[in-house]
Length: 157
Image (cartoon, rainbow, N blue to C red; front, side, top):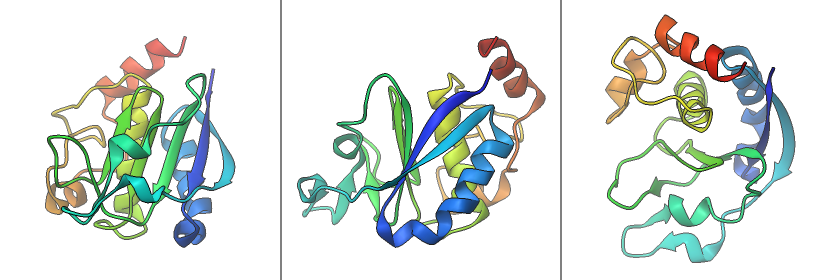
């Protein structure tokens, strides 16, 4: 059974929403509902680092639903300065700041949503492989390896 995922976006990312929804629907067992524009709160901006605090951004999403938020701003997470995305409990935020729009952003969104669906990092060629830099993100495929696919299939039955 497909899980419902609520997709939000920053206005500056609106043109990338249809492709993002399509990628999430294609590569994960989810049904995406496009919810609408959600702008980052000014309080989430870390003036010292010049980035938005992803942990702060992820507050306030309904706990009973899976949500993913596409933003253009650079993000950090406590203990991690270089990020493409972050997930916590039931919500994820994905930043186009370092990836641009397109396949790399889709890989990262699928990766973060994979975490929300219960997948851990993987060492196989898979979008669940950790991406500590842009080169590693570009190198991984926009697909799940057979092991991750099997784990996801088992968890959704």
